[in-house]
Amino acid sequence: MMRAQGNGQAMHGHPLRLRQVAVVAVAAASVIGLSACSSGGGGSGGGSGGASAKSTTAPGNAEKGAITWWASPITTSGTDPRTVLISAFEKAHPGITVKLESAPNDTDTNRATLTTQISGGGGPDVYMGDVIWPAQFGAHQLAAPLSQYLPQSYWSTFASGLVGGATYKGQVYGAPFFEDQGFLYYRKDLLNKYNLPVPTTWEEVTADAKKVQAGGDVKYGYVFQGADYEGATCDFMEFLADAGGTVLNSDQTKSTLDSAAADKAMTFEQSLVTGGIAPKASSTFQETQAMNAFSGGDALFLRNWDYAYGQSQSSGSKVIGKVGVAPMPTFQGQPTPGYSNIGGWNLYVNPHSKNIAADLTFIQWMTGSDAQTTLATQFSEIPTNATVRSSADVKGKNPVLAIVSQTKLVPRPAQTPDYPQVSKAIYTAVNGVLAGSAQPKQAISSASTQIDSALSGGL
Ligand code: GLC
Image (cartoon, rainbow, N blue to C red; front, side, top):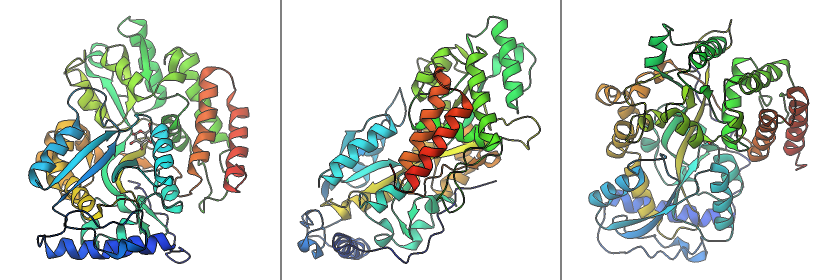
């Protein structure tokens, strides 16, 4: 099984600016504060003031303070995991209060809003940010280097590969909070009715879809993410890896996108829409629209992340008890299963936070066994904590986690700080093809040119 790799870049050449030096000083003081275990005084006023010269003062007692947590909704309906976790944290650490700032659902809008706030000197104390952010955020001092705050013994509590994925130039910027992977959700009842086994190839997905659609049992065969946003890159990465293609060369300096594999991947994606298997509106579908079609009983297959299982079984869904989950399919002739893209969210600290010790207490709790068990058993997330992830009891309550050992993963090429432009080139191309305004070959070639231009600083 492939795992997310770290960027393998050495620590040298990482210029510590004045602000970072100050943050490091705060960090060192706070780690001492944490291990000395709440000696009493303090409050939260370290007055780091965006890491000004005063910030050599310890940030305060890690058991006291008020912090803000910026996080987008983790699920699209039902009980809100964020408030469940905050209440449990506040019970465990009664001296710290956490105020939730609800972030935009779409990861791109979320990032744009947050980067504006943080580069302006403001923003939340702790934020839940995408796993594709460490390079960009690390390179632009939008996140504090957590590896300078928390010891190796903490980082070794995570499942393998996750900390590497949150690392940029030798520093870990995010504490892995939950992992997402792409899965194929299917209607158990309908596959049974038509005597069909769970498909393992895209060709079988297409054939099954046609049969069940022709029988009048569903409107759509397959629903997925094709809107003009990051999610379309995630889905495309899976088709591309199945077809044997890549986006960048190994040192992430040049596009390798313009290939027969990319053409095969995008032509197949296009055929899902033109062949009537996926909705005409696929070019406007984010996770929520695909989820709603599936939960509403309108689709035979759904591509979505792990939480989709929990969503499909929660109140309001029309497919409770009728859903199965499998690793992604691949193209005929390729080794099964197909590739699942790696997503997920980390917890980051704003370099301007005045409550770093409390931030760290919160982050450690959220990545510890109580919070991780809640996420895994109540919300079908893949926990990042290695012990929780391997617990038989937890797996028994999370059918998605139970098959995680079978998935084959492909990361997005996010170790370059230019990843936002790289991804935009990809999703713009995919979206144009799905919307019918572009053809695969030409869309891929222009995306490839845009990627090269972004990597050479031209965008
Ligand atoms: C999920 C993934 C995230 C990805 C996003 C795209 O939230 O966890 O990594 O960028 O979907 O929509």
